[in-house]
Length: 399
Ligand SMILES: Cc1cc2nc3c(=O)[nH]c(=O)nc-3n(C[C@H](O)[C@H](O)[C@H](O)COP(=O)(O)OP(=O)(O)OC[C@H]3O[C@@H](n4cnc5c(N)ncnc54)[C@H](O)[C@@H]3O)c2cc1C
Image (cartoon, rainbow, N blue to C red):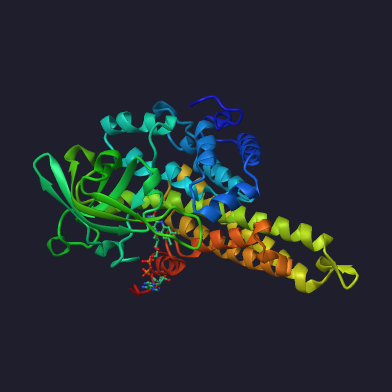
């Protein structure tokens, strides 16, 4: 880890105590204070990548917080990592430019060989390599991941990849990509969940040799892209884990992702609530602060209550993950509740500010656009309800 005035190293052990986490929170807040609203407004306007912010987080070691110390990271708990994301968002910043650097390596960490881990993780931890592209979603299959069509066929010491991904975020700002592709045709496997495999793609070699990236301009600054594979050759040694078991291998990483996204939503909600409270106390209309009206203060109080409740579920999910327990139910519910809470808080904040909410200078319309994403990605809330109905409540599968 490089030296930085802000550091994730303050709490370098797995059982991050509350005290460690509070120190980490202060450190993140301090770093974020160097990136005020104008910084984000500029990048948002230009749809440019906030490289200075990402570099500062990397130098401070925050993006390597989940990489074990033996591979050069700070080996923090998921609870501590969630606190980092929450503080980034509560400060008005946006971790989406780099959040995947934290959790995408989880598949490599849990399922990669020792040789692969030694080769890649220390360089990722140092920030020499960025692994923050996660290519799963495809234009035709969408939420139905098991129907994805990108194929990887074994050919001697290589796999040849053909197909297309969509919404592969940060592909232009990543050296490595985790790719999920079908290695056995769907009609040749017993279960739909079999026959998919995970690969680590070295994009530095692949671009122009079978890999093409096309940016998609969206309503928020998210550096997302379409990715095309045209006879891309990947060394067979870049297969992670067991061929055909890729779907299972990415699932536990997805729980970590859901917890961290939930933490971003909690941070967003806190930001909206704080902004709304400050404004509601100060803005005087009809000779009284607008916050004196229950029509203004009740939505703020409700947003606060919903955010606190979602935060409890997030903590439950993170603690279970850190203990190595199955946390699919809690991680999914945390993401559902947190994304709904942040969206309610965003809408409440728009309403509290009235017309001024629409002015770019206030950052509210930007954060409103940014937080809306999380009801859809990385998994749509409907699909979370499907999961809870089927896997938690044993109701018939609906899809
Ligand atoms: C900005 C952005 C960044 C993203 N980044 C990434 C990334 O880095 N990597 C990646 O792999 N993906 C990424 N995604 C993709 C994201 O995960 C998907 O958009 C999301 O999972 C939904 O899939 P879809 O868009 O294909 O919607 P669809 O699957 O087409 O669904 C459309 C709507 O129908 C609903 N629906 C579908 N089936 C059912 C059902 N059976 N029951 C009830 N409702 C249903 C969905 O909930 C949704 O509301 C990103 C998306 C966006 C917008």
